[in-house]
Image 1 (spheres, rainbow, N blue to C red):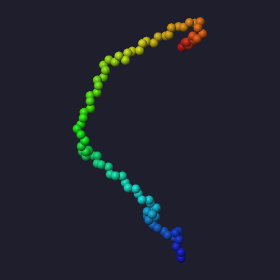
Image 2 (image 1 turned 30 degrees about the horizontal axis):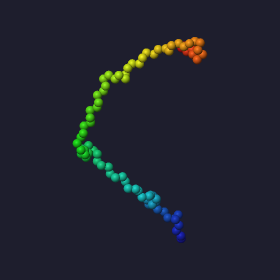
Image 3 (image 1 turned 45 degrees about the horizontal axis):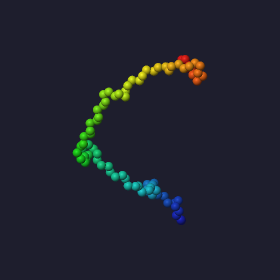
Image 4 (image 1 turned 90 degrees about the vertical axis):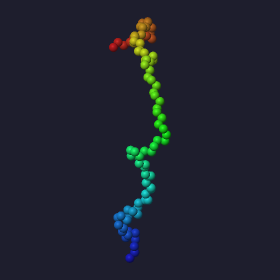
Length: 86
């Protein structure tokens, strides 16, 4: 009686463990950040500077001039195209 590889029968659990590759190491544990477990700040708190005051009257915000029609051109000028009436 000769033994061949096909004659060797392993339990299912053993066959699966033989085919598994070694697992890489897991990530490092994260620090505990629950409330009250934060480390103290590195230095004294420095308050933020006050923002600049908003301008009250900005001269750049002037109203636009009214829209006027351009003066009529010379009817004898061939480059003067008549406007299509709506």
